[in-house]
Each structure stands twice: as structure tokens, then as C-alpha cells.
Image (cartoon, rainbow, N blue to C red; front, side):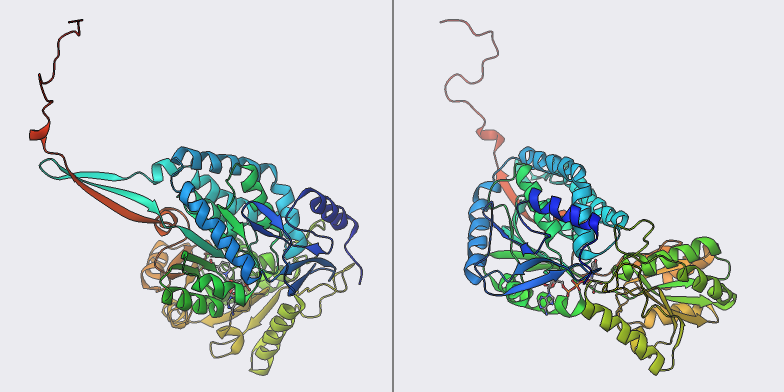
Length: 511
Ligand code: NAD
């Protein structure tokens, strides 16, 4: 083992000494319950290694049942006062939090590089995208505005958005700051309290964000952070005091969580795995299309839900292929702090083996590996989970097409016509996002209307999928975290008499 490089070690030491919740030098990640960062008393620890060198960074507990109960208790107790806090107080929290996140952007990004492996620039993007949700939450006084209607003479119906209670949020490893920040700000400014379970593979950034929430003035118990895997997740999905569950992650876990939590009467929002397609037409702006494709396929080592993992080249757009391969082959793969690194390692050796296995399956099933990223040697990092950019010519019945690869692998397919490309995209079971690259308005319009995917990109790669009724951020987020309360009141104008003399409009004088 080579150990952390000098710069990573310096950052790991600095972060470990300055932040209460976790360590990047082999110590423990802590539970954050009722305003305190405390070591878990569990005997089950998950070791977390730097994906570039396999150096032990921290140990993440499987939070015990008692600790989980105390987190729910703290959140339930805090809800009683937090729900009655003024909306301006909650807005103040969001304003302070956004300033603190900006101030600590580099620290959060450094924690992400260490634990998750993405490049420093990409890690800052991770924080920034989360920060945008905090900024949206600053508009909460307007977003929570109610409505009032006089439904009949002297009778008003008033609608208010009130919080749900204790909510929970379960996040994946690929965006350690952004995804916790999809839920923390909106759950809290709407008056709920929250239990967050970050990914057991990189909870550092979430613990730092929890500390920033505390510094932003958040009362104890409003946000709690617990850790672990299936047992903690199942406890969340079945606890009677938890009213709503937000999940982002893979299909398998998501389906289980959706079923279990809804069966237990909870409101659930779940964003799942993806297989996003891009269709490239012969009239596309070649430079723009190829750069967008390579960025969306290989950025963050392909570990993005909005990654483009399949490209369908239509007709003469097939002649773009040599250039696509050439450009992808030039991407620089290295440790996230290294100068010029365009993407880093994948999360774990197991993920690397899985991705390499899917590439090998393409070979076995008759696909053609046009660019092979397996076995890539990254100078200075012989033990890293690196896979170089990979391009495979495959067809829809192959395993590499059917499964989400979640690595820097782009599947290429050909189609003779736009109709054929649309039919390929529409037959894939994920059916979530699709993009088209073309200079033709009519072609873009046809694609937009005929594609059954929920999210369409025109000359831009696209985001991903969700299960459930309501989206995470924006107006959808506010609706998810609130319920409507209506009050109908009758104040008869005929009863507006003041006993005695009635209303006097004369200048008051001493009698
Ligand atoms: P994952 O499903 O393995 O883990 C997500 C969370 O669920 C973690 O907190 C984990 O502890 C928990 N979990 C894992 N397996 C579980 C199980 N069997 N039962 C209960 N809980 C379980 O996902 P991941 O590997 O961390 O993240 C990558 C996945 O997330 C990809 O599929 C990606 O497409 C998806 N993703 C989707 C979006 C989106 O917006 N649609 C965004 C980011 C990531």
C-alpha cells in the first residue's frame, strides 16, 4: 500500500482536527443525535477506504437499535417546538447555512475527494448543486404562503401548509453533499425534523453539513444523523413515528424501501437507478455532441444517475465513432487532487470488479470492445479502483445493456432511422431520461413528443429517474414535506355589534 499522497494526508489531518463528526485518518464516524456527536457503542463497523490507495480513512458504525430510538425520540421532541417556530426563524437558518456552506465549500469538497474519489472540481460541483437547494429554501416565507377564499357569505376557507413530523432521508454514495442537501434544507424549513442516514461508504460530508447546521443555529434534535446498512434502513421504514422517507439510490434498495415504507403508512419519494440514452443525428453539432457525450458518460467515473450510458448513432452519424473513441481515450484518470485529473477511481474494489465483469460479459455475448479501460495503470496509484474510459458496441439483449453499469462505460448502438432510435429508447425498461443531439427543430420536436421517458434533453445530457408521486426539490419538495390543512370559519357580520353604545367615531374625550 502506498498510503495517502502528501496533499491528501495534509487535508485529511486538517479535516480530522477541525470537524467533530468524523475522521479521515482511520478514526470513527459518529452518530449525531440531539445536537451531540457521539461514538456509537455498536460492535459492527464498516471500514471505509480511500478509493485511490486503499488507505483506511474511517470506520462507520451500524447505529444500534437504542441509538436509533434515541434519534427518533430527539426528533419527535424537537418537532413539538420546531413546528411552532416562526417561518422567519427557519428562513434565518437557511440563510446562515448557505453562507456557511459557501465558506466551507473547499473543506466539504476535500472530504468528498478523500472518501468518494471524484476530482476536486467535480466535488465542488457536488456541493454547489446542493447549495442551490439551500438557496431555494431561503424563499420559504413565499413558498409556504397559504390561500384564503370566501366560500359563502361570512364564511372563509383558509389553506395552510403544515409540516408532517419526523422525516427520514437515505442517501447514496455518489453525491455525498448534494443528495443530503436535497432533503435537509426543505424538510427543516417547512417545520419538520429529520433523521439522515448517509451512505455508509462516504458519510463525512453529511456529518460536516450537520455540524454546519448546528453552527447555523439549528436547535438540538431537529437534524439527527445515524449510520449503517439494511438494519438501520429497515428501522427507518418501519418506525411508527417516522412520517415520510426520502430515498435516492439503486433500484433494488429503492423498491424494497418504497414497498416497506409505504406498507407502513409513510409518504415516500424515491429516485432510483438509470440507463439514460442519447440519440445522435447526422446533423448534430459534432463537437458539442461528442464533448457532451463523453462528459456525461465518463464524468465522475460514470457514477452519476444522470450519466449517459447508451448512445444511439443514427445513419451517417455513425462516422462520428472514431472521433468519439479518440477523444474518450485521451481523458486523464487519476486521484482527485491531481492536476488535470478528469475523473477518479470508482468507489470500491468490488464496484471495480463488477464493472469489469460487465465489460467482459459484453465480449462473451458478442459485443465489441472499441476502447478498453480495464487494467489501466495510474502512475503513483497502483492500488486504486481505476477503470479508464470504455466504449462498447453492443445490442439490447446483452447484459451490459440491460444492467446499470455505473462506471465510465459508454454503450454504442446504431440505428438507420430516427424512428428506429426512438423505438430502441422506448423499449428499455428504465424509461427515465433521454437526450437528442440535432440541429433540426422538427426532429427535436418529434423526439420530444414520441419518447416515453420522463425527462428529455435537447442538445444537453439529462438527469434521472424517480419513483413515487412527488419530486425532490422546487415546488415538489415543498409539497412532499407538507400537508394541507384547511380551516373553514364562519364569522357572521350580523354579530359584529359591540355591546352597549356600539362603535363611536368621535374623538375620545374624558367623560
Ligand atoms: P444503494 O442503493 O446501494 O444505496 C443507497 C442507500 O440505500 C444507502 O444509504 C444504503 O445504505 C442503502 N441500501 C443499500 N442496499 C440496501 C438494501 N438492500 N436494503 C436497504 N437499504 C439499502 O445505491 P448506491 O450504490 O449508494 O448509489 C448508486 C445508485 O443510486 C445508482 O443506482 C444511481 O443511479 C442511483 N442514484 C439515483 C439518483 C437519482 O436522482 N435518480 C441520484 C443519485 C444516485
